[in-house]
Image (cartoon, rainbow over all chains, first blue to last red; front, top):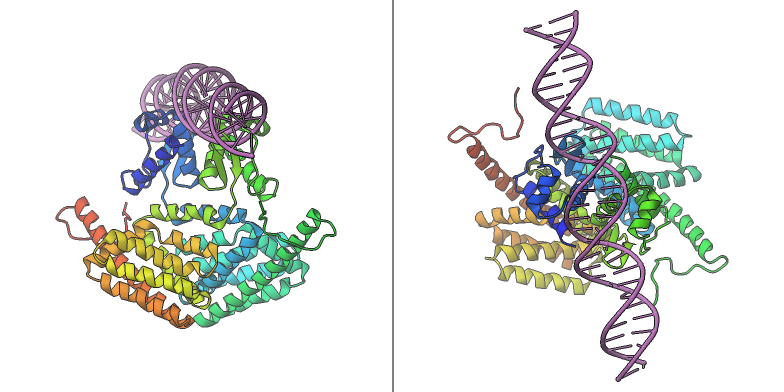
Length: 250
Length: 250
DNA sequence: CACTATAGAGACATCGGACGTTTGTCGCGG
DNA sequence: CCGCGACAAACGTCCGATGTCTCTATAGTG
């Protein structure tokens, strides 16, 4: 297959070269098709791919435009990718968070304003009030970390970490936390991060963020282990645990 | 638009739920179309999107299959996204690298084998030999950092950092380095990282990686500034330099 | 003159069918 | 047992038609 992929590459290249700057309007599909030497069907597939990557914005009845190309748009797909990762690679994601989130939180301690601190305090309060509602806990947890990282002013960093902490990943961790009666302890960890940020203590913020990510990772491990054991029983009832990596001998 | 996007969501959801595990074969397009209540054209757009995201593997004359869903595949798109970022957000990318790459390099110092160290030494030698060929320098530079990070054994981390250091970003930095006669100094920085790794000194590796990223960032700044000034002159010949952030007063 | 309702044109959304090309397979023959 | 050729299945591409939404210009109204 070359035609459609060529079209994708051509449009991408026109954007990268500046020939199609953010906000620019593309020619109508039939004209674009003629220009690139393929049918309208092929152009539609190409445009659809770039639209799903948030590179193009297709407005029905109007036309197709280049988006702002802001990091928050282009990095949106990272979250979708993480959602599809296999269980055993989620620990790799956690290891990346473990490396990145503490440093980012430390940076946030240097840049955070009083208003942002108050916002965090409010989220913490909400979290404490919702201590028995898993759905809300996840929501406030997401808001807490997003708010912290966003204060670095680095939109790319924020989008990356948002993507690495996809919704289903967070949901799994919290499921473990709640079933393990560790929700309260985890909320305390958020409080510790908040206190470090309020005192603008970079190293303390970094340390408390690392401890928090570490706790999340530990609970994710337990959830994944329970999950793997369940899958194992489903596949071979009563049989001892064996290979779980999905490989197969020829 | 809902039909095609619904189809994308449905297929994604079937994969996420395990109904379509890695390697599974999807029904033929016409059947898939009937099953999801839309025409084959719509299904083809949906499949194309998921293929471009490396979620599906379409084999002409054979069928459509779910990929391995390995991080290296799913995170491949990150590089394409970074390639399209605007100049002013590339500094954000550099800030992320500045936070992540030193920690990762430090981790590599703990896990690297002798064979991998020898591989690095070879790349360093190649780099020195190619000191006047920008193209090769970029190639060896990419190989060096990829090899270092890959020794952490974390494929997700490796793919992320590969994506953050997209080819055009590296090319710009090296253009600055060469024009500024700093190529030699930068190769020395690679050597310093290598020495730290060889002595398995985590903190030293971390420090030398930070210094190296910092140098890259500095040269990227000069390249971007020169670029912005040129764009400014192109827009207003002879006019004094003014705002270069692209904002506009009403 | 200012504002609103409306008709038209333009553009994307979706469909259905047709044909070419590639690939995997299965049976035949050496 | 192995190689070869024909068949069938599946994706790649194209074309044309129709539906639906948006923007805009125009005519009408107060």
